[in-house]
Length: 267
Image 1 (tube, rainbow, N blue to C red):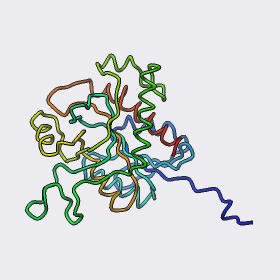
Image 2: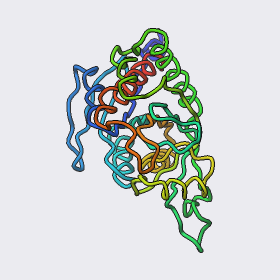
Image 3: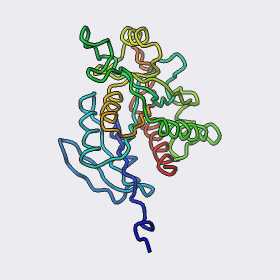
Image 4: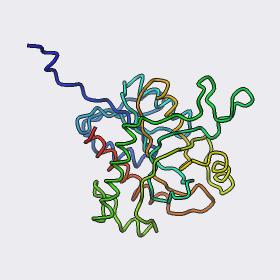
């Protein structure tokens, strides 16, 4: 008998980056066997979720922090895929607070090595835009649509935590899913002037945040598939659209949990 042919496949190892502690906690609640590993000032939680080995960790704020965390997930924990959830500011004209943007492409809006290289081009790589893994992006979009359609039909999401009442109380309509370009930079974009500058320079941008393109660059260099999933918490301008902490608790974290849970079931 060929024991190798009949061996049980090794569980898929998935690194999950959470932008917010509230998101991370909802992931840890699904991993009763998790243990923690302290490394480089970060706490990595290793456990199982729907048969996969999951390594969950806070990304850290900014491109360097997220790049270091991603590198450790790949090199020290041998993650075969990287999933990143969090919040972002909406830039696209159709992108509203409460919507979800799945990144097809990512760019560093503050990368500027002119005159040595064209603006936005990653020095030594010959590209300015990095593409996410198409299969993972497809899965993320389909799963997010399914999760959000449950709110529309039944008043609460698959995980049982995102309710229509919370959306109504926050003044948020039924969320939609968008797919396209996400811009990252080491700046918090919170003014009309700053957000309009990015729109003018990179018109296709749907959302802006501080880590995704760095995660994409590390994954690109190591040949590791990745997906970036962002809930829109604001319009990256001067207005405070919603109570941010309540948005994280009542909208962003439940959506992240429900989407990741459903993706792991299907992966």
